Amino acid sequence: MNAKVIWTEGMHFTGTADSGFELPLGAEKEVGGAEDGFRPLELMAISLAGCTAMDVISILKKKQQKVSAFEVEVHSERAPEHPKVFTHSVITYLVTGHGLDEKALQRSIELSATKYCPAQAMLAKVVPIDLCYQIYEGENARERKLVKSGTYVPSEANEEGRP
Image (cartoon, rainbow, N blue to C red):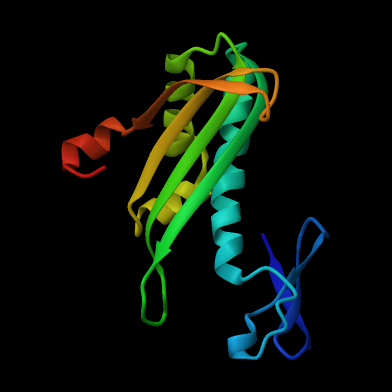
């Protein structure tokens, strides 16, 4: 896999990769940016959310779950001093549908965390990641009712004594 960024002006870059798509990167005004693109660490969080989301929705479909809406949120705390790395992340899976099986969702999250998602596998080596979920009954993300929420902790993490 190859990726590159090309400087445009100021603190604005355009990122590209093997897929051929382009992505604007920018910075905050406080550091000379123009607030005109994604911050690099935002892209790491989006990569994490996107990677696990693709795994989980694919597995839920294979398990014949009736999903009508699906979101994955990533909240990452950062160190206050440079290099301001992620110090803790929480991934929350918001799954809406009809008669969703909590065990099927837990297994989907487990498979993503332990087998399929390279973004999560890499980041989990250096950043504690909590995995949470919310199951909703409904047609879409606007018209739904929360029926269950929980936290998934991989069994191997339990053995090591950390979440």
